[in-house]
Image (tube, rainbow, N blue to C red; front, top):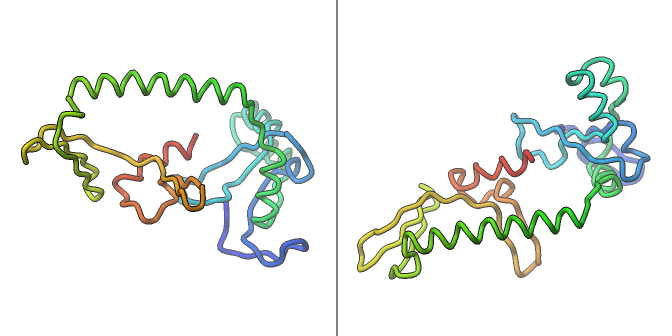
Length: 185
């Protein structure tokens, strides 16, 4: 949970305050679990704890005195938080590659069905209304197919960066709200 309070970090100076378990501070490859706050879903620095703290919390049926004592939550500046996250994040690249591959195959099959069923490639034009979240395919000026749409994010070719829809203030709430589900994962 990021608070509006700033802390004076010995390394980084004034910065936002964040909270992590004691193990993450000096650890490496300990896992990095996040506790998103539904009251502050856009918090870039949600509370974080290691895999061992996650196990203790699960064994205790949630956060209680014992699991909180084990975690011994500490305050860090937002810059230190980013360093801690990078050191402790565990990613299995082979599993990631398998997930991406199977997801693309799954999506391709569904897109082919949609293209065929609704003859998407045969319409004269398409229009999107970001305020309503409706995508309309038209032929000879007449709407033929309407579908609800949601943004997952956007990619900037200029900076070569990705931004999740939930973090992009230029998107209307209607088309970015569903991306909160991605963030919660």
